[in-house]
Length: 286
Image 1 (tube, rainbow, N blue to C red):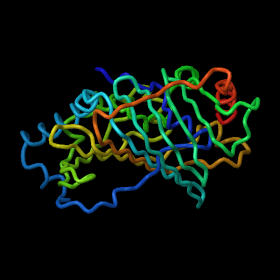
Image 2 (cartoon, helix red, strand yellow):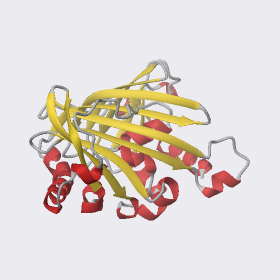
Image 3 (tube, rainbow, N blue to C red):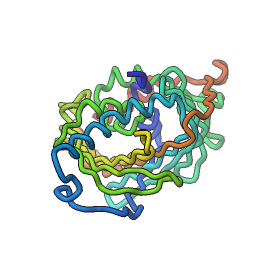
């Protein structure tokens, strides 16, 4: 599979740092056909075709090599919510990307190059006086193991294909996404089949509800994931003000396949490495 991509979510790490991407739009588009599962799938053959379409979508999308991408996320806990969004371009083959992110009134320039996240926020207090900070996403992933934030990673999501069975997919009507005709599918992913599934199950439950919109070439045009992330048991038992669970809605859209992506690392003398600090913060939370 070509889309090996961002092995630790650029989006997820940025959210942990309080700055980034994704933000839920939550399926507000009106569908032409929203029949119940029993009516939408009229036979075993149709069901099998739907499953095949969804499972092959990640490969077909990766074959486009590059695309423009928008990501939105809404996270809600204890009666408060934070919405953030970003737009840019992604190399679907290796996960490199460039993006402008808006979160809580702040605009951030973000790049992912060779699984390293770089961020530059004009208004932020710059560590060491340098304009950029970086996080080694691969190292964070290795140290922290399974992370619900990685579910929002467009390159990681190829793992869903291996976790989807005929019982998991329901065809749910057609919609236009950015002027393109698409077929919408509702998918229930068995979390235990995903990488780090046992740990993820404890944090988000046994299944992951997802919607996916595919164009006539079988490529992903939109993907929406809604989940409730539970704090680890150790965090819940401690005297902490952190919420015990957070509801997260994530929506990604892809367009302009084949667009040019120019993701380059900033000059090293302008960058402060924040990887160890991110790891320490993660350990404190757990």
